[in-house]
Image 1 (cartoon, one colour):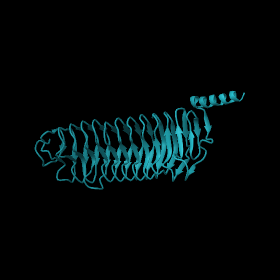
Image 2 (cartoon, helix red, strand yellow):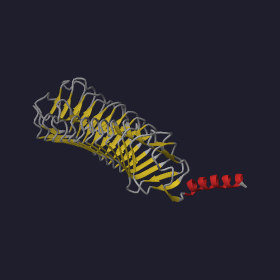
Image 3 (cartoon, one colour):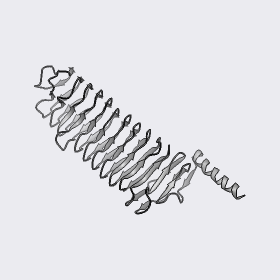
Image 4 (cartoon, one colour):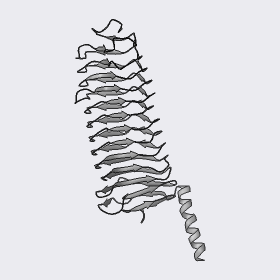
Length: 336
């Protein structure tokens, strides 16, 4: 009889995960606890203050697990990771995660998790760090962290309507290939707003404003940027609204306005710039450095920039193709 009862209990737990049964958070929802796998839909009934003890302070494991903080928070001080997400296909939403000496939130396991309406803040290092592929981050905020707001170390993720602000280095950092970023914002960070090292990364409808260095720093190969805006970036000199070291990348209908240096600075090769706008920047609107080779610029607008000219090509246009652009320049007549 005892063996039968234990077996039925185990079956009930598994079915809760499969059927999406909702339950109030129990003993697993505690400092040092683990929720899941196959825990069903778990709804928090209180906030947690995890000042000492186990690391991570709280772990959520998929599949079959949804943790709904329901507006409550978890705060940590002496733990490396405040909230750890492991396994696959876990869902974590509607809460605040504060603290952690390494990460406020760490997303690992094999990926395909969904993190939604979550705030990661006040970490001594990164706010929200992703170390697995094919996750979805939706309406998340990462602010006031000592290092990066979002550190996306493994590629293939989708970031939608997230924001990063007041972080000690980059707002968003992408260290792998294949991420997609839409409708997200980075502002008032101490380094770049968005920084992609390898590419290809896709950005659309994103805004980088008033970051100390570049609004968007685009490296690697094959990235695509459509309808993004860089506004009022580059408190420090030598940076740009869009700083493109990448090769074989495409920038279409982006806006660089009122940045404290150039709107677009290009050092990479074989990139295509079409229908972008650079206005009222303190430096050049569009600047191609001597290292830039075989780039194509068509239909771009650069006006009212305060550099020597709206557009400059330090390479003397030797390999650059210009057509149907609108701007004022005293550089080589090949620019058109």
